[in-house]
Length: 495
Image (cartoon, rainbow, N blue to C red; front, side, top):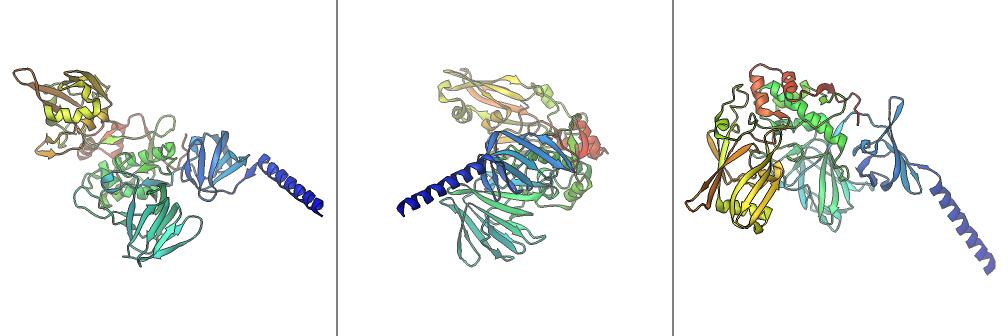
């Protein structure tokens, strides 16, 4: 009897091993699923979970009875109809059945003052019924209008306190979505450059653990509805309609480009809500900006070869490089930028202030600061390499943004007012004048600058000036993006 049992067990193991070998040797086609995260090494599906990607993976896009090969980079976060084929436990083929145009945005919501995309806790309240559901299990509850809930991360799990004080412990991902036309309000912080407000969001939220005690908050929202809260945050709502329309097209193009190139795909979002992408929901929606968005619905700018590039925009142009006082004092002949408070500015940093600002960046080894010099400007005239001269040596600071964030002025004069405690220089269009004492020791350096922002793409104050002069949004776009042409984002995109 014992011998018979041994034979039966051996045969069972043999059959199971053969079945598993056959399963791994034969291609396994999984049902269509939604992509939550993707990198060159692996993809996380909503239902299939994490799966490794073969280095020989093939990808195909299907649309209107056509199928064509695309690179892995064209399989985007948020695509809902993606079929994975596995061999030996790895994805060897991905078939995408989503449309080629962008319908939704995945926006990482930052903490107070846009400091970080990683949250420790958040409080929410809905303007209608709000549904909370754990991914995969269906566990959850309903929140009614006016009620408040709190969520926090602990031990790689999401803990949520409902309106009745009951604690729910969920896994690493939950979803929140309101009734039709409802909004989700965050009560943990306020937004706004003037009047502060608790931000309300369209669409749904995905909360996902990223660290044992931190989570990401990702707002999934339609592209056009996303713009409803971008355009008023990026351009004053009282500006001319044609300028707002130009801003809407530029913002839409930038958004589509970020989805197409999916630089944050491994984290599961396309853009953040801060200046790292474009500012989102830092001002409430407004009728003027919504009208501009609707008047240009679907319109984006494409390059000559049909690809989509990022349409950068910034506040104010300096109208060229600034290297001396004569240029700095020169007025704006076209009258497009001169009304901007940022057209010309100046600030002074003392020797002590410079030492405190520069030593953390270049090190104390340079000794006491003797002066600064422009080592290199780019083709636009921005300072891109700044030399630091010290009593014990020299160093350089490279990069337009690095230079601006290093030289934080405590006070800055512009136009008719003075600002204090800036987080960076308004732009890298500047020149310097050094003041020394009779012994030759550095006393201070005055920076004479112009413009606000990186100086790439469209000047927003320039767009305002053109609109006030009677130019259309098409004229504005042609001036600032001369290499691009207008198309709708529902047309075929090339990756």
